[in-house]
Each structure stands twice: as C-alpha cells, then as structure tokens.
Amino acid sequence: MLLGLRTVVLAVADLSAARAWYAALLGFAPYFDQPFYVGFSVGGCELGLVPAEPDQPTGPGGDVPYWAVGDVPHALGRLQALGATVVQGATDVGGGIVLAHVRDPFGNTLGVIDNPHFRADLGQPAAGPGEVSERTIVHQVRVAAPPARVFALWTSSEGLAEWWHAKSRIELCLGGAMELYFLGEEPRGRQGSEGCRITSWLPDRMLAFTWNAPPDLPTRRFRTFVVLELAEVDGGTSVRLTHAGWPAAGLQDPDSGWPATFAYFDRAWGRVLHMLVDHLGAA
Image (cartoon, rainbow, N blue to C red; front, side):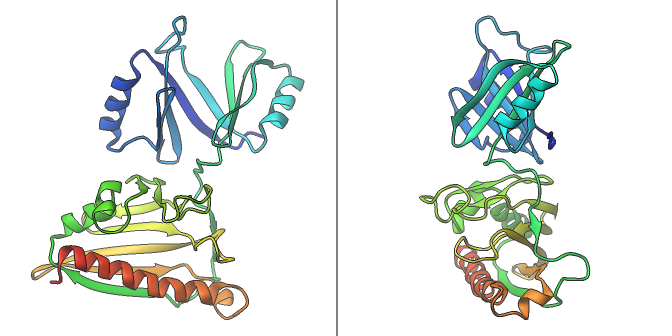
C-alpha cells in the first residue's frame, strides 16, 4: 500500500519568510505557491510549508510526513482496519490532490496522499537492457557565448524563457523536474514534458534528462533520454544534443508509433538548436 515517502510538511509562523529562505537554500522557486501552501520538489521528494494555526506547534513535533498511495480512501480503510484513528478523512484539496491524516495506535500522526502532479520516478523507459537501438538523433551547432552562459540557459526556468519557452519548471538536482509546458491550456499530463527528470549534469559541460513524446503520439507514456554536451571552441561553445534510448524493435515497426516519434524529434531538436543560435548568435 505504501509506495514511498512523498512529502514532508513544515508548519511555519511566517510563510512568506520561510518561502524566501527555502528558495534561497534550494536555489529554485516552489512549484506550487499559494497563501495556504508552498511546495518545493526536491530531488524526487516534496518539501511543503504551511502557515501554522494559532494553537499548532512549529519546529520538532509539528511536522506531518505524507506517504504516497494510489487510492486514498482504500488506504484509509486499511489503516483503520489495522487500528489507526482517522484525524482527517479523504479530502480533495484542489487539482486532483487527495490526502488524509490518521493517528496510529501509538499516537503518531501519519498522512497519506495521492498527488498526480508530483512523480518521483523517472517514468517507464522506452527500451530495457539489450533492447536499445543504436540509432540516435544528433544535432550540433556553435553559438557565440561561453559554456557557462549556454548551460544557464538550459538549466533554469528563467534561462529557458529567454530563448525557448516561457513556461517551465526546471530543477537542477538529481531527479529534478525538466518540465516545459508547451500546451498550457490542456489538462495536466497533456501540457508538455510533465514527469521528465534530470538524471545527471556536469556544470557548464553536460546535462542529461528523460524526455517524452507529445500527447497526440501513442508513445507518450514512455521515456527516452537526451544528453546535451557543451565544449568551448574559438568564439563560443559547441552544443551537441543526442537523443537516445529508442527501442530497436519499435523503430522497425511502422505501426508502433516509434518511427513517427523519432522523425518528430529529429525535426524538433533541429529547430530548438537553431532557436539557441538565433538568441546567442553563431560562432
């Protein structure tokens, strides 16, 4: 039933000050920011801040750990069957997020949560060991800017907004979000690269992240991966993008959707890198 520790919520006396302090500590803004809740996605886990109630303790003893579950009412029923006491029943707090609180037989408070907006896993890979195609998409350009400048443009929401897309959530940490919302008016899950994650990076040299297909392609539920490599050259930076992790069998089956996905990204990444050249100039 319990799928993993998902969220730790801290009750704070001054939400605004706490938000600013944790944003400075983590180096990025919260993904959810409202007067009643501030949420940070931190390397696959969530740190939540809430304003303390008048009689609510803060600091040690005032925290509630939440466990991820697939079905809150079902989890609540099982907890009750095991002797837990319900403190707060299943509650939809908005955006499809459902949570509940119980007290275990020993007096500890336990939260369970189903949050479709927060996924700590890297998604379902398109191909397993021995199934990955040798075919890759490779595009390379030279831009008139140093590697540090190029790296910054790829690794923050503010940087991406300068040249690619205005709305995104980028968290430069292991398992951090690499989400661009190209279709912001669509429901969550159909907006863009939701659920894609940063898997590794070397400052000013390399960035790797998982990637998914557009919502109109049947391959969307799978993840491939992208590696961006930066190297200093005369007059600027060589930018090499490799999109790999394609299923060998899928690329050979025209009905699988994979040939169409491969062709789509071969065109798309070429356009993206030319946007970068337009922004920085060619070296």
